[in-house]
Image (cartoon, rainbow, N blue to C red):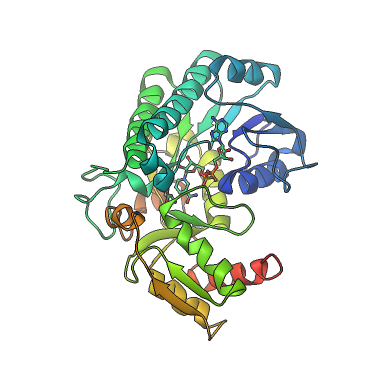
Length: 318
Ligand code: NAD
Ligand code: SER
């Protein structure tokens, strides 16, 4: 991997992805070259590992000063309101998800930052998109405010790249599963809770129905995909909105069966709530052949290897 000298700002560094991405970026670029920032107090796992600055991404002036003061060249923007929380306050989700991105893109244009990373989601797809192997380019009619904001964000990214030359890169993450930092209010969070409850109580009541298939990915694959995309030569990238990205696809029943191989007495029941409607609007699997072709994406984890790793790592935490 060709790592050039960069100074990176991670916004939303204390969230589910931010903690692990910041840690990995610090290994690659050097601790002092990666500034972590968030609204929250610094996450325990980040303390002592590099610089931390409290910053509200919605305050454009404060963000601009921070970027100049720290000689920032790249920004990873992870602050957002996720799908389930977004449905409870759609106006707030739209405001935060859109304005945070516009603030970063505008500063990137003005300061000629070298690269920006901003994640989209499988939530851009809606009930009229093909359900299986959903293509990169297809009907995109999201029905959640989260998905609407991600789709609009993708259009802004492509626009800033085409009109102002901002090198902004993006992935449509599937639901991400991890054990280091808690998830932030998504529909796919059941696939994390299920491991914690299986270890703690040996039972779990799932808020999605047993046959709800969704695209998912283990966090180590997601972090690697993010860094591989950011390190790919710009000329190789044919997608400047956001790349489809695939890891695995499973239902609550299948993840339950995978856990039962380690905890035979595990009991799984189902009580779908408002998140079922969100999940039903999303694909069961996505086609990521452009990511495979353009920057040689290949996931490493499947359901059973992820289950073994999650249970091993959560065992002394619950
Ligand atoms: P998260 O909710 O765990 O973390 C977001 C972080 O942003 C939090 O620490 C929060 O305090 C911070 N934040 C919120 N508002 C802020 C503000 N105004 N200023 C500064 N910081 C603020 O979310 P995550 O799961 O880490 O997701 C990160 C990104 O990846 C989001 O854009 C999300 O939509 C996207 N994504 C996540 C998943 C997933 O499964 N986790 C899947 C697809 C896409
Ligand atoms: N995991 C995310 C969510 O459920 C998908 O973007 O909101």
